[in-house]
Amino acid sequence: MTNGEVIRDLYRAFADRDYDAFRALCHPQVEWIQNAGFPGGGHHHGPQAIIDNVFRRFDDAWESFGFRIDDSIDAGDTVLILGQYEGRHRATGKAFTAAAAHLYELSGGQLVRYRQFADTKTIWDAMS
Image (cartoon, rainbow, N blue to C red; front, top):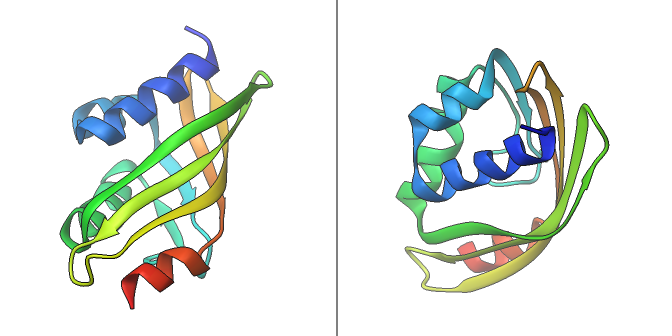
């Protein structure tokens, strides 16, 4: 399996909320870096911390929240994904679309580091 395929499987695990699959695709010490301005943004280490502090928090606050892949570049141990966040906030009912880039670093077929670059203003606008 190529690293690009590993990342595609990672997105499937996100969409399906298949946390066991997510854990299997990640190195035990995976580093997860989100924009400081992103809701719940910051640094997280390890698959369980990411599940608890990123994915489950979004499940609680958003009626829907997902990512649409527009393009990908598989550069060996680095995979770049360009796309759009899309969602609807549970409390406000407002929807949004926000451009984003995700940079993944892999080793031995596992994710070791994720970095996010996203337009956070449109997301915050949906929350207020």
